[in-house]
Length: 132
Image 1 (tube, rainbow, N blue to C red):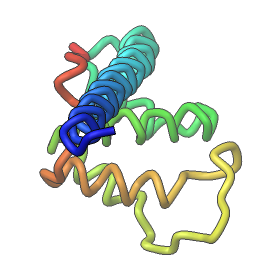
Image 2: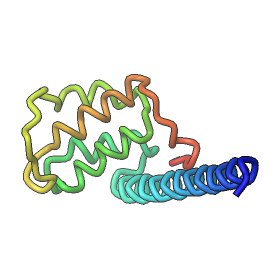
Image 3: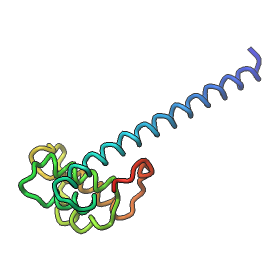
């Protein structure tokens, strides 16, 4: 095989790899977007406000399960809205255990990520959804 043919094959394989990577990125963003919309819709049904305010209300509602409240934290982080920052910080203890169940308490790990995103941290997936 000639040197030019090898380079041509490498370029072809590289283009396929980049295409697959972009496709996976778009699919992942879309899936995250649908999940954010679902969590927002559930919160809006329960609290009748815009997405962010409804998610904040869900997080503050002690009658909700920890699973639901942690889903609200995750969605608030994905949305990256600064209105959630004070509420997220109120729950954050900075004590992140090695392992934590999303079913038995407020996730400090999810809070840390959500606070970073609500503080203006880079989230390159938000183009995939508009929750409101």
